Every structure is written in C-alpha cells, then in structure tokens.
Amino acid sequence: MEISGKIAVWALAGLIGGAFTACGSSDSDEILTSTDGIHGTVTPPSTEPGAVDPTVTGVLTSSQAGKYIEATATQLKQLCNPQDQKGAVESLMFIANVLDSYGVAGQNSDMGYSRALAKATRSMAQNTESGDYAGISRAVQQVSNSFTVNPRDYLGVYTPVYDDEEEEYVWAKTADSFNAIIFRSEKDRVEVSLTVSGESWTGKFDTVDYDYDGYWDDKNQVWVSNDTEITTHWTVNVPAKLTFVMSHNGDNAVSAVVESNYSESAHTFAVKSSAQLANISANAEVTGTDTSISEKCNASIGSSRVLYSVAEVKGTNLCNRQMLEQLGNAGQDAIAAQIDNLFKGATAKVDLLDRIQISSSCSSLKAIVANGDYDEEVLQEVNAFAAALNSSVTTTLNFGNTDYEQGTITWGAMPHTSWGYTWYDVEPMVALAGGSAMSFGDFIDSGALNGSINAIKGIVNTYRGAFGLD
Image (cartoon, rainbow, N blue to C red; front, side):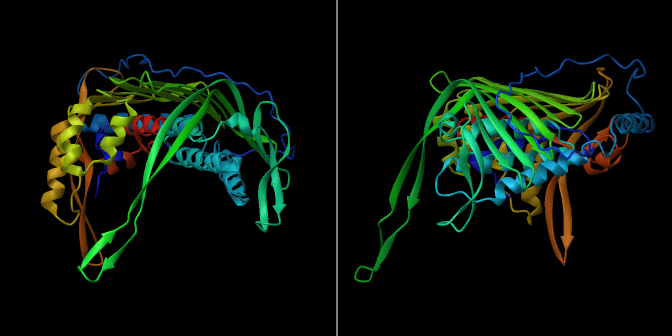
C-alpha cells in the first residue's frame, strides 16, 4: 500500500462515522423543458446535538449496547422505504450514461461540463446506494471546482448532433441561453441544466509534466537525456453560484445549488451546498484558512435528520497552494518530515439519529505517513502502520448524546488468504466498554451502521479540488 503526498491525509481514516442504505421510483411521461432562471438557496447544515436520551444513564453492558444498536437500526428501517430512492438512483445512472454517450468535438465547452457532470452524477448515485449521504454533498461540490474555462463563455442549449468529421453524435450548441448551460436529449428524455449567477472568482495555477526522451551513446556507453519540462498555465473560473437540475422522463432526479468563494492571495475558500435527491436533503459547508479547514454536513429524510458530521483540520499553510503542491511532489520520507509542520491535528464527529455518536481526534500524521508505505505481505510492516494509527488516532463511541463512553475503535492487522496467497489489511476493531469486542465489519452488519463516512477525507478532497490539486 502506498500513501502518496497527495492523499497523505487518508491516514485520518480513523475518523469513521456511518449512514445507512435506502433506495424509490417515479413515473412520468412529461419531459422537462427549459430550466432557465432556476435559482435555489443554500440551507445551512444542521449540526447542533439533539436532546439527551434519558434511557442512557451510564456505561451499558454488552447486551444492553447490542439492544441499543438494534433499536437504532429499527428506527432507521421505519424512516426509510427501500424503494424511496431507487427510482432517483436509476435515473441518475441513466443520466450519467447519456451525458457520456455523446462525443466531444475537440476541446469544446463540453470537455469541462458534460463529463464533469456525468462524474458527479454517478458519484451521487453511488453515495446514495452506499448510504454515504454526506458524500452526496461532496459530489455536488465537485461540480463547482471542475472548470478550467469560464462557464459564462459557453452558455447555451446543447443537443446531440451528428458530426461528419468525428463520425459520431456530439453535444453541440443549438440554441442560446442567457444564464444556463443545458444538455438536452429529447430521444433519451434527459435534461441537465447548470444555471450561472453571481460574480466569478478566479484562481490561477500551473501544472508541470515531463516529455521523457533521449538516446543511448554507444561511444561513451551512457544514456543522454533530452527530457523536456512542460508547464501548463491554468485559470479556474467559478461563478459565485451554480444551480443545477437533472431530470429524466420529466421528473427531477436531483436539484442542487452550490455557492463558493475563493481567494488565492488571502489563502481562504468557502463552499456551501444544498441538494435534494428523492426524499433526501443534504446540506454541507466547507471553509478554509491557512490555520483551519472545517466541514459541516447533515442529511435528512423527510423532516427527520438522519445524520450530521463536523470535522476540522488544524495546521499552518493549509490553503497555501504552492506549499501543498511542494508537499504533494515530495517523496515519502520528505513528506513524513514535513507533514507535522503542515498539519497540527484534526477532530471529527459523526452522529446517527442523535443515538450513536462516533468522535475521533488525530494528534499527528508523522508516524502514520512514515509507516504508510507498507508491504501488505509483511506482517511486521502492517503492524507498524496499525500501531502508528493507534498511537495517533483516538476514536470513541457514545450513545444518546451523553458523556458516557460506550466503546473505542482501534486498528489491527487482518489476514486475507486466496489461492494460497496471504496478505494483510489494517482494519478497525470496536471494543465495547461493557466487555466485548467485534470487527468494525461485524459492527456494521449488526445494523447500526451500514456504509461509512470519512469526514476528514472529505475535507481534504474538497479543498484539494478547490485548489486544482486533484
């Protein structure tokens, strides 16, 4: 396993929370027409703890904890009908396939839009199926930082048109729109609109690639390198507000709004989003400065808040793109030496139905990064990585918004064998304060948690995207 500089903060995977899986359908023969002029508003995420559960009066025995977990699972089943999101998920996957099924003629506007929208659409569908409802918000936010051209330069309605030169159907502009980019396929009964409003913020950055070339000098028996460094200058233009609607057969599969603000000179950014997918509402807010990056998000089914999460990474130069690029390009040893100068610690909390709370903190990444490049066949190296996680990451389990610690989550090597080949993963273990322990997988299967959220990983991915580092 290798942890590169670009995803070194994956090591904060000790910050684990959960959602659940639910799936609906809708039938309509009417295709949505123009979505010009749609403007939504962002709803702030609800992340204040709910009421204390009066039935939790102390540390529960293993039997009591098991019953509490099962009661939580029962409440989840009562909240969601397995069919509630099925139709929306199927429509999203169909929409993504339609967006990708038509070609892109050269470097036209579609390169930054239909492909990016298809990727985000699939991510929304997959996160819904897995129960990672906070991931819906992150997929929505992907749309806001996927552009390397100014969206306002490509406003219009795009439909599939046969291109003789490309010898395929491509998305081509066939009508004007004063404020939206619209992909419309009447044959597929699909329409996706991206409405632009507000002032744009602009960020500039460079990427460096290498053209490796050379020849073998027979006389001197040496390789003569003619490698060329190629620097590409990028400008990212993102409107302050993006509203998008995806429909199939006249029904909205998802509608969302993203508000963003970014200042490279001030080293700050903020991304806020709200999304509606079937009966799921997902709201999120990510803000960043050089000393702190935080994320808040919540998901509700109908009027009931199902989960919320809060997370924060503290450090120095967290929003200094040049520093992050240097770290990302460094080798493993260099990253381990520098990482604690950048990241000073992290905390996260995930709450399920105000009944189960998982809280984590990470004191340091140095040991985690230093041991992250382990050989999965060497148990000693795998154990060293698990030990680094256990020494740096603390994760506790609470019930009912009380202060009683019901358990902890630790890390250990888990063997896997196939066709005579044995390798090891580092996996979490849940130790209940009442005296029993189980693998995290068994804990998930018990019904309390189905699917998982890595809150801090979400932060890292979001701010890396905001700085064009993905």
